[in-house]
Image (cartoon, rainbow, N blue to C red; front, side, top):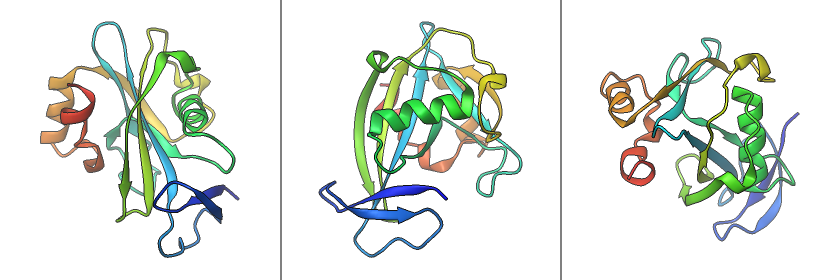
Length: 162
């Protein structure tokens, strides 16, 4: 049973929530998107596993819901370790922006980290990711044009890789 903090529109914690239950009106849960960039200017992109209930085999950045009691940064670090097996250093990350997405009842924090180490899914603690690859902006655009990039990540071209 996964627990989340519930937030109001001002990002004040107003309660807790069990994942899978309907969110109360005018409340939000916190989500992180984690973009990881290497010194060659490429981004680590992951392909969702075929057993995922939404967007199977689509490409995306690391991301997920922040757990009850976690900060956004802690959630970003945990999600990255779980999904792609990388232990990012907090000092290598920067919160780029936050958005309230009323259609999803969430607040999404978008992070950018630098990382030049090895990526091995053998170190991941979940089976959410099929494979990973380092791609540049043009490659990511080709994924988008081929309808292979999760459509909620369109902001990448205007707000991450600028």
